[in-house]
Structures are given as C-alpha cells and as structure tokens.
Image 1 (cartoon, rainbow, N blue to C red):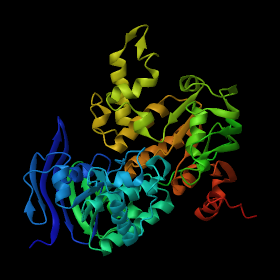
Image 2 (image 1 turned 30 degrees about the vertical axis):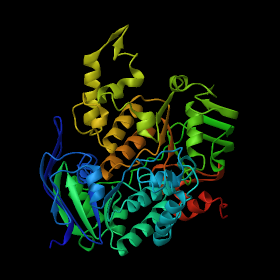
Image 3 (image 1 turned 180 degrees about the vertical axis):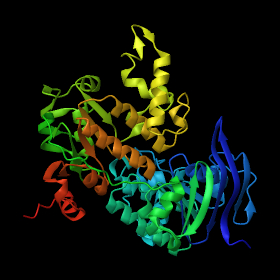
Image 4 (image 1 turned 60 degrees about the vertical axis):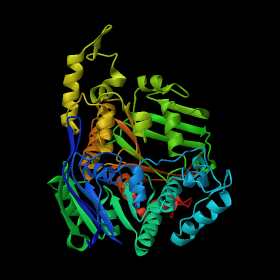
Length: 505
C-alpha cells in the first residue's frame, strides 16, 4: 500500500489560453503538514482546487487513499475525506455559527432540524481540538480568526481527514495565527493530513513537515523542513534572492497633507468605534497605523476616503475640509487608495486588467478625448504597468478574475500609485501576496514617499510597519494609545500599546 493518502502526478490545467499548471506534482502522507509554496500565479491554489474537485484536470493522475479518481467534484472529494478551507470563507453572514457548520448536512428529527443533536456533535470537535467558537452568534458578529475555526469544524463535521488550507493566515493577526497553529498541530497529532498553502516562509518553516515548491505552473521539488531555510525556499520559488528590507530614505518631511481632527466614527462593533482620534501625515513620510484587526483601522480609513460617515470632527486634505465628501470628491481632492479588500473595493473582477488600470482616470487625457475613448493610449499605459509591476499573465485584455490574488493586488497598487496623488492610503497592501510581490509593493510605497507623497499605511504585519514607516501611530479600541518614531519601535513596545497598555518612559 502506498505511503501517501494523496498523490498527484503529471497534472496539466488550462483556462482558455492561460496554462495555470504545466507540470504539477504533489503527495501527502498521513499525519503530516505539507506546505505548498510559490509566487502568486505559480499554480498552487489551482492544484489544490483540482484535488478538491472544483475544476477538472486536463491531464494527469490523482490518487486518493489508493484509489484513482477518474472524476472529481467537491461532493466526491468530501465523500473521500477531503475538505478545503478557502482563503475567502464560504460562510453565510446572517446565519449563526451552528447553522453554518451544519448547512447542507443538517441532522433531522422527524421533519425538523435536530439542533440539539447538531450542537452536541459540534461540541465534540470544539473540545477535542480546543477550537473555541460561539455557536449562537451570527457570522457577521465574530472575528476573522473565529470564522476560520468555523470553516475547519465544517470540514471535520463532513468527515475530512485531509484538510487543505489556502493562505490561512493571510487575514489573521499574529495572535490569531499562533492560535491557528496550535489547532493544526492538534489535528496532525490526531492523524489528520494537512496541506498548508502560504506565502509566509517563517510560518511555513514553523508548521511544516515537508515543503513543495511551484514556479510558473511547474513543480520545482519537495524538501524536508530540516533540509532548507527561508533563503533557500525564496530562491526555489523565484529563482533569485529577494530583499524585503527597504533602503529607507530619511529626508525632512514637508507640509501636512492630511489632518484628522478629533474624529468620531460609528461601527457595528464596540471595539471598532473611533472615539476622538487625531493624527496627521506630512509630505514625504510614511505614517504607519499599528493595531490588532478590528480596533478601528477600517472605520478610520473609510471615514477619510468618504465611504463611512464622520459623526464629529473633521478631515482636512491638502488644506481643504473634505469631511463627509463622497469617494469621488475625496479622490479629486488629491487622494489615492489601496483598499484592504481588493475584491470588494479595489477591482471589478469581470473587467479586463487594462479597464481596471484606467478606471479612475477614464475621463481624463490621454485615455479619452472629449467623448471618445483613446484605446491605443489605454493599451500603451497598460503594457507599461504590466511590465513595471510584473503582473502575470501579461495579457492586459484578460479579465482580472483570471489573476491570482497577488497579481490582482498588483493591478490595484499599479493604478493607485501611478496617479501621483499627494496622499496615498495603503490598507493591508501586501496581504495574501508572495515575497516577490511584497518586495515590489514595499519599494513602490517607498518610491512614492521619496517623490513627495504622504503615505498612510495600515498593516497587520508589524515587521512591515516598522520597516516602512517613519512614524507609527498605535490604536486600540478606536483610540490612539501611543505614537513613536519607527527607529524606537519594536514588537514588544508596539504589542503593549496594541493591547491598550501605555508607553514606558
């Protein structure tokens, strides 16, 4: 009998003219965590979606527990003990946690759902793997980390002993990521087999038994964790060294481009309400906002950009009061914005790459002249940006839905930074992207600063906040708990402020 519970060999998968996987190989042993890594668009998520039956393969072989899978769809995958936790959760926000877990697999008593039986069954998994969730809360009322635990319990309830996790820490705080790792180790010790797709090499090194690498749709090899290092993995993924430490410039900051004065903003969650916040951003500096997700970062950015109403206080951009302006008027006043959710607010995924790149400047020269669209100029611009930001595939007429998450993010970054606005707001700009894309995006933000823009950076990655920022503002439950220069900051003093503590003098 094979030592592998899953074996994938000679896999080929195309989408139209795009060859997502040219030569895919992957195998998984019982009771191991096997990480699958690669740049955005390398084919790793596609490989696992093929295993879960979301797409048919063009050619190749998939064997699950010794049986060749002639046909795979999600129902068949579930029947063979395969579960998948997607990067974007498949949960119904207005249903309770319990209702989501049993959705489609509801136990019944007569003609009604047997919620008591379901609750007892779910509680077994909560206790066995130490996965605390609030069964009677709606999904809209729980944290991202808790929602992810709900997804894991869903797979277990359906009998999964092979669990695929696609970028599971991309939206988690460091504290939530540590909590997830404890759960994954418990699952492994219980004999579950786990596939961990990630860009974060420090996490891969911490959690994995083995690591497989893909590059541009091809399998590049598998190594045991003890036989490799983050530098070695980076070279295997990208073919060169990557430098995430920014050569930070230290010039004198110019005039103030953004002032937030005693701003109050409402929120559905008590901890996210902004209560009398004041801060400023100057020309030629990056101001980082550090804080645990859900402590008002999103509400603050939405208030500045015109998406959410300011209840009290004012927002001044380039000397102009823009409080409660609509988003277009805020942009016209001099703001560019990389939103934290690229799919919800950054892109129209049905539109092409070129259309997304020019979307916010479509009525301006050289992209239009009077009532006439200048297609040749749009194409020329798109060709330049695709090359400059290494967007793959390079065909700018493809819909952005054909792009991996990281390449989609590069489209947003390319569009917003290239406008040269005096204020750039970057919310989670490197969330869910690979190390090569992180390098490009970080250098792009530093270049915008050098060219005189004021940059307001929100990131859940403390290392990113410290390495990019000139000043750091820390918020906790909608209030500023401290401000310090990046040269004085470290994970300890920032962490204390993020938890509501005070700066030590």
